[in-house]
Length: 499
Image (tube, rainbow, N blue to C red; front, side):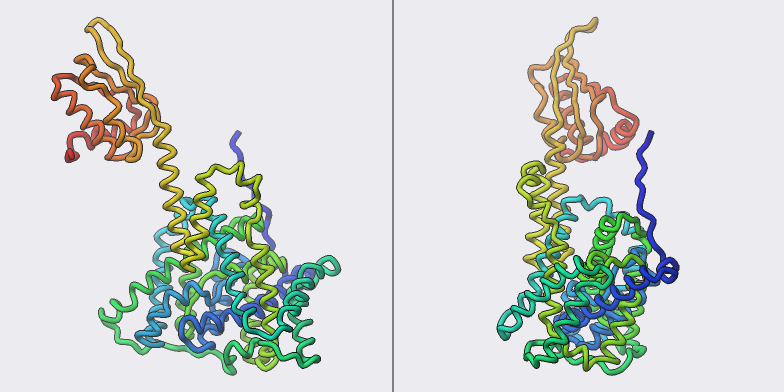
């Protein structure tokens, strides 16, 4: 009997609209996310070197577009630091129109990659890399809050402490209203009534007072423009898809549901194209805001994502003066608790570290260290995958054994070598040294019944072994090849250059 994986049925938008309880959860979650998006979008605009409105409009269009187009319900996509870092050089060296052209091309590349099946590559990302990805994101989220806690009035620190206490304690009293929303409203009211002078959202940058408008980049449509923007657009596409698909997988695990990764990749590309035409800086999935939406607020449908975008626009355009008064201490407290909740504490528990193979822990730590040092998730995950592949190849290569036996039959003596294990570049390179060329009789049999030939390196090694025996006037017979190994060996033997 084969085991089947079952997933919890996911509530739909229609279900949420018919249930006052679910609808309240989705609406309040969207409001909390919108409030948390504002300072983030402004910060990322500064990183990219653009006006704060560019990041805010990007967050609005990304969230609304992905709520319809994406494959992972309740996941939040908006302007992100990862995308801002990639496209910042374009803005610095060539200007705003070239940046928009880069966003548009990046979105089209994402659509092409999705159509080519890039989402299927997620199966090659090991669990240890996923754990490292999550832990690194938690560290980066916490690190981003430190700037808001340096060189600030002393009142900021007790306010952060109070907000954290509210976020931790309020759910024990009332689980209907999201605790982060209560903390934000309470601290904002306190600063207004008590006239406490602390950094607020308005200090981060000017909020827009108009709706986003249709924009077409004023750039020459020629090869020179493509030559400028293509490298940045490709980097943006890869970083965006990687971060989005990893975040989608994380939400799948948290909600015990399944999402369409190919549709998510297509949706990210289409959302970036839409964002570009509205003058936004592009973006991808946001781990922090997604965790606020899914984990802290309990949202599960596309409605929360859509409302996050709508509320964001309403807040910054219609209630900008009020939003500007929100103390950064409240939002810092929310993000600190999100980072604490995101970190996989079980992965660093002494009991876990003792039981976990050292190679798994090494991969997790490599992913965390590289991501935190570079502030680039793509590089961190890429290094993690490479380390995992290297350690796996090394481990599998050591499982290969060669046993020699001298046998007598009617034709006389012969040496039989029984090779056990998987034969590929890491294990077959040493195969050449496992034979007694001078001592063996005139007949040699290499029995591969318990092996499998995976690549040309193995065929080349077998050819080298056969050639060395032939130079000594001895014959070699290779037996026991399974169908796939026999086909590969028959096709490549004698065709590979010797070194």
